[in-house]
Length: 278
Image (cartoon, rainbow, N blue to C red):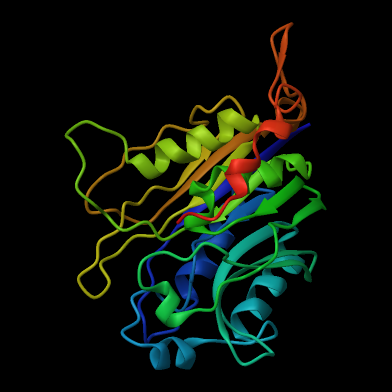
């Protein structure tokens, strides 16, 4: 089974709560036939909060306007959407969260577990593994940004049967050697190859409070190679990356005649991986 997917790269600004760029991108991707559409982390609220109070002011409940919009678009357009948003939980805490919606229904809700930079000042960390949901676009796992850089976390998704890891991201632009691909993209490729699972990353663009972004939206197939050619231009601009993925390629974990991505593991020797760092 082949499925068309889209990674939508859009801007956002703290204080505007403007859903229009997200809606336009989703509609454009659906018009291109994408069955799975991924938009960035904190796609409407923006990212560069100055305080916990500012993050709280931007937060919405899971039945707030951002999630309602995502759900309504999936019902209208017949697609699966994974989108990041700023959540005000029923427990009163603020979370960096993402939803997976299909046919107007909220199919999965995930709270970012691995917080980056100043995020612990603004968000509580999630405490549940990445959900894996059977959809019309295959079995989709949801992670957020820095989660994708934790090999244990992407492996959990693969062990749970994910065909595709959908990762809303906000990757800040850092210095890198001339001609080199962003290391965050390399890590997404490594996650795909080491687990034989497709990875769809929706990064963002547009300067926000002095911060520029990589614009690293990519579709990586289960071999670890990019499924669509992209250029990592600076400054990053809005774009939609579309590619077709073969779900059977992510379900066959064999490496030639003699090896198996998951079967060759020696988990009885990996206890130290779960030991807390000093």
